[in-house]
Length: 312
Image (cartoon, rainbow, N blue to C red; front, side):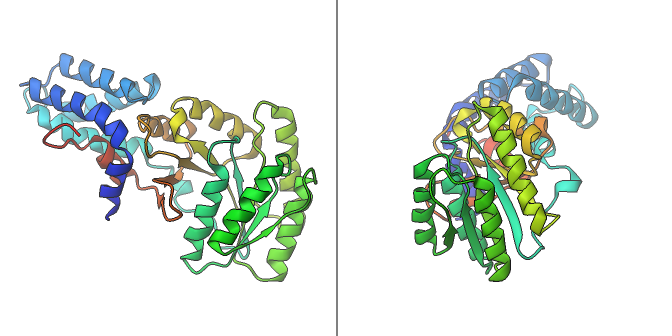
């Protein structure tokens, strides 16, 4: 299955909510006018795109339409330009084009609130990089929840990767230190570190993540090479606020959005990309290990906003 088709299937709930509205908007207007733009704006907001991001999209769309067709053009031109505007909105800054994973071993620190799909996403990342012939090691540095290490161990067995862990309640930084030491000694290509996600206790979380970073830098001044934040796609606009907190705490370098399948809030991806000025690295498209896709802005925009002949 090609990526566009897979993303259309993943975003089916959002497309069902949005597709009919867009189809009706473009089929009911014979010309480009303010009423058309107003209806488009309402449709975007209803898809959980968010007010600020919707206004930015509409401003850019109006400008592109003015330059391309004026007010006398076919409304279908607006439909085509909408995909281009969306792709531009969610394209990452040039400085973040590719993950910095050319170091050996590279270290990815994975953060996110508990319940966001973080541990499952780590397993998918391990599988993804293994398929690229990378030797991957996992570290269970979420020692606050006893079940967290057990869950990661179970996934490690399934994926076929080793997991470094200590007893429940151990110092997370010690786990990270031992894991990097082992990764270096045994010449692993990539170390992926799971962390706790107790966002309600921001001070403790900040101190914990800062300590993990400090002990990693004792062995490698450039570590961690990437900090991936996992967000739950079903939380919509709330994910933006979560992300801002983690960005403040630990210098997030990339976003992964889990659980996009089955949610009608796929439009929130647009607000996340625009407001955080961070690249969206991967999206979770299902429950299987292989259901983790590199994010491509144009393909996502097409999957979300290309309108079928009949409502999806």
